[in-house]
Picture (cartoon, rainbow, N blue to C red):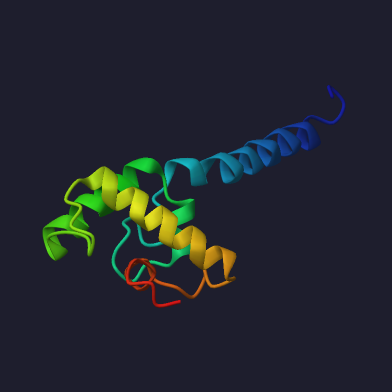
Length: 107
């Protein structure tokens, strides 16, 4: 390393860049633009962090009042979306199915 200081520094710099590129997505908003919305796909729902799912569940209740089955708790919304999107994934439609369409069972 002492004979090839330039190559050593370049190698260390490359390792730091690779580490940053690998770790950074964990600290960035989801690929759905940072926030889930009605048009977010079930795939986006599945890859969203629990905090993002919770925030969308609260937004859903504000915009839509309640679920078709009358549920009014954010926890119930999260569960209903997860179940509906799991069904969409089972049918192979998770990438194309929006969260709202899944809740409406529009498979």
